[in-house]
Amino acid sequence: MSPTSFAVRIERQNHPSQPPYWQTFLLDHEPGLNVTSLLQRIAANPTTADGVRVAPIAYDSGCLEEVCGSCTMRINGKVRQACSALVDQLLTENPTGIELRPMSKFPVVRDLCVDRYRVFRALEKLQCWVPVDGYYDLGAGPRQSPAQQEQNYPLSQCMSCGCCLEACPQYQEVTVYRLDGESAEAYEERRDAELDRHFIGAAAMSQAVLMNANPTGQSHAPQRVEAMIAPGGIQNCGNAGNCQAVCPKEIPLMHSWGRANRAATLHSIKKLFDG
Ligand code: SF4
Ligand code: SF4
Ligand code: FES
Image (tube, rainbow, N blue to C red; front, side):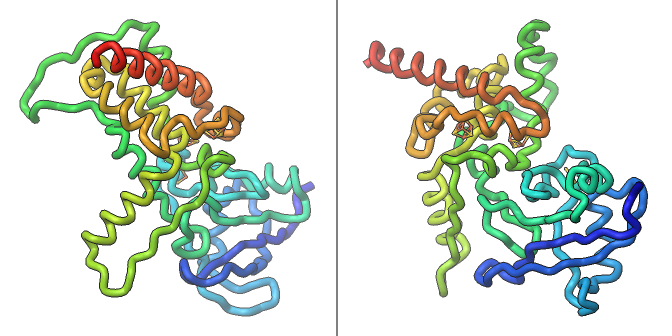
């Protein structure tokens, strides 16, 4: 039998520089709720279980169908998307209630919103795109065999959610604050240089593998592999496999790691012989 009401415990934070704190909310049970709709219910009446009126919880959401990755958070200790986390299922697993926390590997902006800029910076560092010469009609691109499509399509489902990075023991939070009086340009340059020194993680690595496998993207493969073996690169991976275990898209990340390492070895041998 479903409970008539349930408790939701949320780790909140008012500002990146302030400490986190907890608040508990009591909600009436409704069939078919997911965690995003639960947060909408709280926003409509942000009153804690003690009857205190508080500011609504800040949270991100976009697609509501596990495609954009923006709603990723820790739900009952597991990193996943709020929009696909069903309340009934969570209460069956843990009848005492639901606990929500922001991801721990990214700077908290407010409450459950985190800044995933580092994920996108890593994609930029590894040039995870297929170059085009212009915006005129280039005609059909080179064909890929069904076997190549089968191998590469799963990698294209990455939504940069950050679950694989949250679960990775080699991936640690890096926060770069803007200094007093520092211009936006100077801050961004310093921030990117600092982020580039740290581990790129599984998501960007797998996207670089995907772009290197694309017949047009192959033209930039040497530059991508160079970036993959630069400081903060693939050599930091400890091969524990946590990343693949938590990926909501079931992307075969350990296979991508194997492909990335093989590409790096071949690249190094080629450089040796090319002088
Ligand atoms: S590889 Fe999977 S877990 Fe990692 S960002 Fe992409 S979709 Fe998310
Ligand atoms: S296999 Fe590498 S990227 Fe994946 S969790 Fe382990 S250390 Fe992190
Ligand atoms: S809102 Fe896009 S993945 Fe949840």
